[in-house]
Length: 399
Image (cartoon, rainbow, N blue to C red; front, side):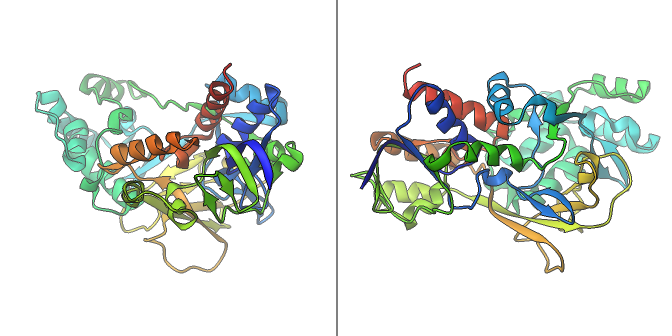
């Protein structure tokens, strides 16, 4: 039996940042278990057609969180990154306009601009209507009929591939309010106005894929990271993993839906886990290089199976081609390179908040901490996962 104060399940951004923060504060009694051969989780990269391709879809480093950047730059210095202005597009009515849609309707033909402006004035939130509690009606209430029916609703049907009213509305606070005044002003002035994207700029490695930095972080842990070591069993009472690793505290970044297969759980916890839903995404590479300067393109047209196109040549130098991202339930058989991310996105169903709260309360009583996208069942960008990993480690060691 091998004893550790902390055993971390999963070497993605949150698990790696937790481990390195422990190490920074002098704690060496820890071990990271990772099922893949290299660290990185969803942020891993592979060489495809002579250039890096990020197997988890489009991953980029945001520039807002200083604690995350300070840690990441220790392993890949700032000089190894190139900063880009975000260029993302939406395909609508046969043209491509800049994201977000409400700030760039002015790029549509005049008649289409008038259609959307008229629709916005009739949005329930601007008319003083009561806020609905179902997803589809909430989107219509918030954005108006045309933005909802031609963009947001079909796009969400494609990415989630479930009946949309199974989704909650508690996570939609991220959607900005659409101001008729600001949208009209942008159409008159022929330039963006109002709320612009949070990720206006991002960083991407000059010579590598995004997975390089996480691989370096994993390698720097030496024998404190065991790669190619999936979790096959957990004795919760004794906190023994795979029959040979014993922990005082377990930090899990692996999906909760895997836990019933590797341990015995109380019925109430198993019941809560069964309500959690996730989406699998197929990443399909195409060697053709698309025209334009967009790094990624959102496509709500339901005649196309994919929901997003990522043009790597516009952020990954000396590369060509693009990839599409498709909910795996919508994918068609194809020739060529494909990677399926079984666990891509947690789904914000109505029951998720109460279910994950029940799971985490139980876990805390067992000295198990849920961390990262799958440990908390929250969609988060990699910089957020790093920041939360740092904070969790500091909290547990009392700094």
